Length: 298
Image (cartoon, rainbow, N blue to C red; front, side, top):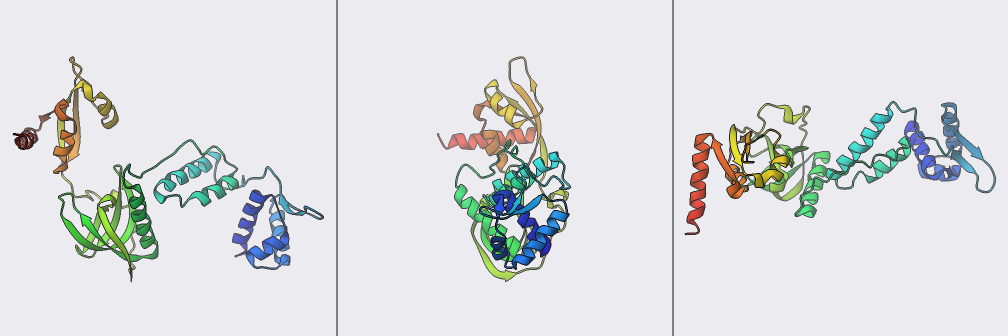
C-alpha cells in the first residue's frame, strides 16, 4: 500500500540519511517514477525531503527531522518506548527491531531508564522456549498439548486452545480453554512440560480482560497474623506493606493469603523467626506440620 510504503521511506531516510531512488524502487518492487511521486507527496505534506544530483546525491531528509507531528505527546512517546522495553522482557528480544525503529521515528534517546526481566533465575532458556512456543500457537490459533503439574503434584495430559499469555503476582500464566475440563483455565508456565504445538486449528477468541473476572483462580483466602523476629527485617520490607514494631523489635503483621498446602512451605521459609498468632486453626496445623518434620530427624 502507498501509505505503508511512504511511512517506511521516511524511516529509511531517517536511518540512512541519503538513498538513491533506484535503491528504493528495487526495495519496494515499484518503478522509480512511483518513488518520485511518493517523494513529491511527502514533500507536499510538509515532510522535509529533498533530492540532490551528482556524486553522493540522492533522496535525503533533514538531519534533525523526527516525526514530531505524531499524535503522541513527548511523555506518551517515552511511555511507549519504555513499555516496549518491558514487553521485550517477556517477548525474549523480539522487540529489538521495533524499538530501534520507534527510537529513530520519535527521535528519543532517553527511554533507557528501565530494565525488566521476568525470566526466572533458573532454567530460563527452557522457559523462553515454552513462552515462544505458546505465543506462536496463540497467534496461529493452533491447539497445544502438554503435561501439567498441579499445585498438589498431580500430573495430567492437557489439550488446550491457547488464548492469552498473562503475568500476575510475579508468575506467568497461559489462559486457555481446556478440552479435558471443558472450561477455561489458567496454567502456570513453570508447570507446563513437554508442550507440543499441533496442526489442529481453533476459532475461539477471548474479548475481555481475564484477570478482572471475580475469583478467577477459585481460591479461598484467610487473614493471618504473624509475629516475626527482627532478623527478618529485610524480608518484611520486601514482602509486606503494613506492620507494627513491638518494643522488643519484633514485627506484627496482618496479611491475607490464599489457602493451600504451599502456606506451610511459606511459613517454614522464615524458620524459627516466625510465629503464627492467628487464626488458631492455622496455628495448630502449622504446629502439627512442624512436629511431623521434627519426627523425621528423631
